Length: 208
Image (tube, rainbow, N blue to C red; front, top):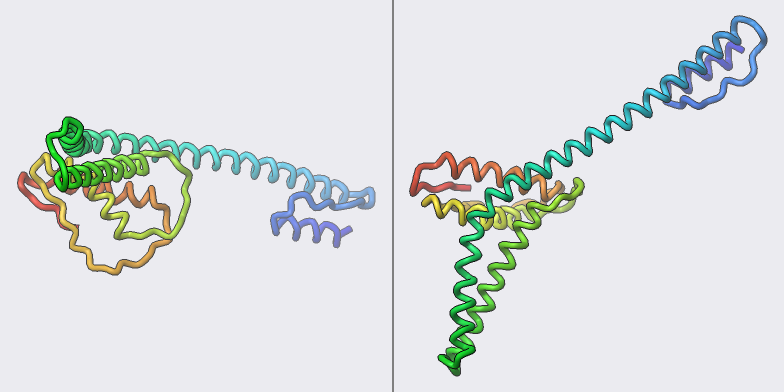
């Protein structure tokens, strides 16, 4: 009986709360074995409760992070609206001139190319904003840090320009590839740069 109790205690210490103690003689060892079984049941129940609470906290933290991203995205949107408006005006003007026959030959191709460039610019802006704002689970991966920084500057640059502040990247390549969560790192860099822009005097520069 003592050996069975020893094995039960050892298994419990290793985290196996469901190891059966087996039959014991009808004496005080039986009572001790029953108490050990009840203790393990209580520990298993507490472990399940702790796991559920931990998962709930993780979900709440993810929701909080997503809310913070949406708040930041809202602040970025005002600057990006102006940035998108400029290429849209270019597209409208060039397309109208092509449509009414005001241009021809090489000029038509030139205007068409400027429309393509403007559309690509809008696509990059919208894609960057959606990537930043979307909710997603933590997903570590190999991140191109230079590309991430350039995208972040594209997001913040328009709002900074409206304040008369320029953002300059003095990063020397090549940068190492990072193993991390892209959205969370992007949010961190975005918040740092936005704080720097807000803290800068007019006509100032933010160096990264």
